[in-house]
Length: 118
Ligand SMILES: [Zn+2]
Ligand SMILES: [Zn+2]
Image (cartoon, rainbow, N blue to C red; front, side, top):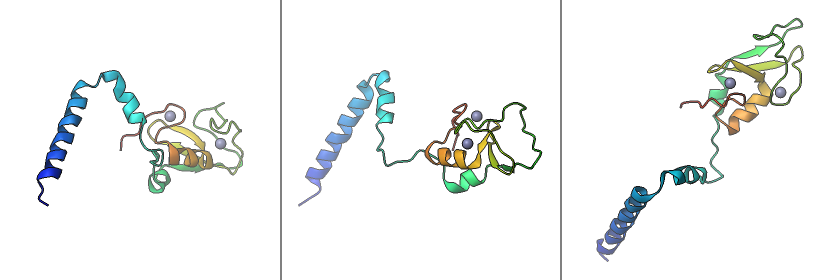
């Protein structure tokens, strides 16, 4: 068995792919990227999440933005002694537990969906 036939098939396949790329309408591109395998997780790894600054709330705690004392993920009020994590890109903050869970599955801030460049 020589390499002739596999090589020919590869050439045909690549040619076909180029043909598809060339002729695919732009509107289809988004559906293609959404069709990634579900096993692939688009979130951040633990080390990246850990590198985001954490704030432990004291008994008399002050938030960077007054009157913004509800975690947008679980919709619970922040309580003393709870640990918050801030997303450096946009300075949004959440319960560390809530946002860690979120960031493992999504690389974007839940509030502004700011796409993190990796
Ligand atoms: Zn929360
Ligand atoms: Zn944000």
